[in-house]
Length: 172
Image (cartoon, rainbow, N blue to C red; front, side, top):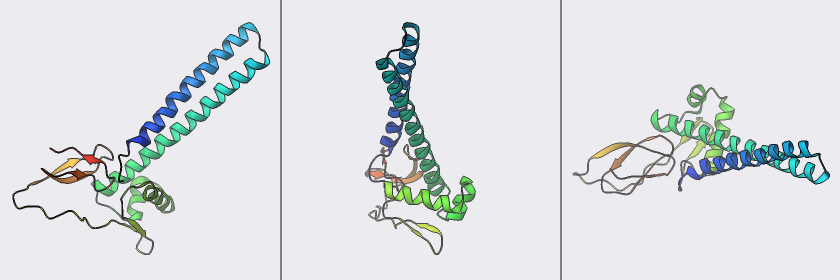
């Protein structure tokens, strides 16, 4: 992915936090109104906060689960060097159709820039690295991506980014 994928996590987390706060206000409003007697405005406000909080919680949890699934797929592709959709299906315990759907969604979200799915061979085709050739003195090292967990070969003194999700890698 060309940009840092952490906003997906923060977006889900923000929804969960806001949903929890709204639901808490709704419960406080409900208990206060129950003690004082309900009027129509109390009912509207309680329902608004509880309903809105529940929706924010639902979509926040769903976003976090989707990101974790993306991270698991990226890890299988990067760490196990697997691009075969059937193998990924076995690893994730998802159906091959689901694997195809998830990978297409990941490609649309910007994971694996330049990659595509070859339907005939049922593999994720990753583009060849277009990185300039390294100098003979530069020694490559392996660095784990903080975004997706993939192991990447990095060269000291160069700007490196994860070849699977595009997150920047800190120089070592």
